[in-house]
Image 1 (tube, rainbow, N blue to C red):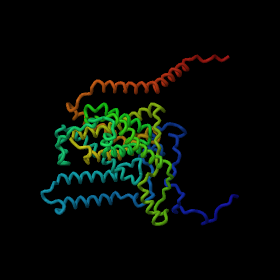
Image 2: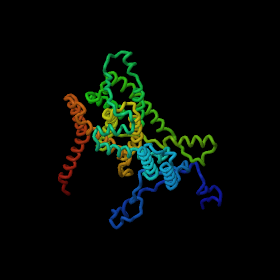
Image 3: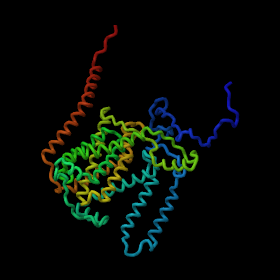
Image 4: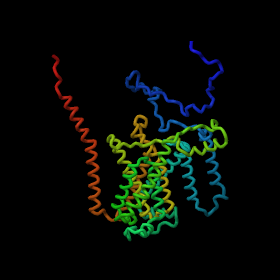
Length: 453
């Protein structure tokens, strides 16, 4: 008979913490729909097998830091109501004569974000805490609602409303061009190095962290410079010297930011993650290091977009490239129409939040196109970000009527040639092979079978 352990020897307790124990329970293999492969009928709709359940996007819950993952919905509700009651009823806080509407709007926004933090679904990220990314989603929704409201206003009314947020706004801005002296001299290059070069580098560092692909970043960088050429007749700050476009922007700032971002991605990709709870970590220094590591990724997925794999991947990459270009161009038009300086806090906040919104959105999109069996629907972050960028385009389209110079013929011909090349590549890469396969299949079906001897 095989030997067995004695009672109480070498048998771990079910509640005993173990460093080698998995953080999440292992999932059982998904059963075949129906019994013995039979499709599920309407009278089997109340079955309780896993394949009949709808699960949220984030199925795993990290409990490494146990205290921060306990449900506190009722406690948060009580705390929020106490704060609202104090602010709304205490005269020391709200004296007569102050702007009650502004404080009321802030209270409504804070209440909505608290609801978002507690009740929204989890996204793909669980570090430093899923509640943070629920708040990020809530801010995105507030911005989208604000854009929908502005969509039904005229441009003059929108400019007047912006003065409520910042009294310094509402003043026309002087047009500034960067192509006054395009001689390639060290002095001109030195004069072109300003704070916006650092902003370029930081921006492309963020894009590399979002896209996690060298070629994608290079294509997007070149496409944005071509878009600047196409739109410089409408926006004066797009008019730059050739060396400013291709040397300072593409080869220096964009490349440096992309390189640093991809190096960080590679570091996270190869870094071993050993997540232990506070109780499993011994020593005050180790516990403090574990708490600080809560702000690093729990895991890191390297994106392999594979645009030449099939039409779905190719279309997704083209769509993502188009959305990124629109997200990059929209703030230039919005700040021009609403008379805001490039370094205005509203412009900077919009760029920072788009970065935060795009991090989980691109992750959801990648999983949606790469693993459609697991991600059966598009994630909430990518859905809302697509709606936000599209609404910005509608607002710009409405307010831009009779505001900008029409596109010259050279720009129209350039875009027409680009679209034609893109469609031709799609047909050659995906359409023709499909057509050949269809013709072969039809010939096989119509081919007469040899008669048996």
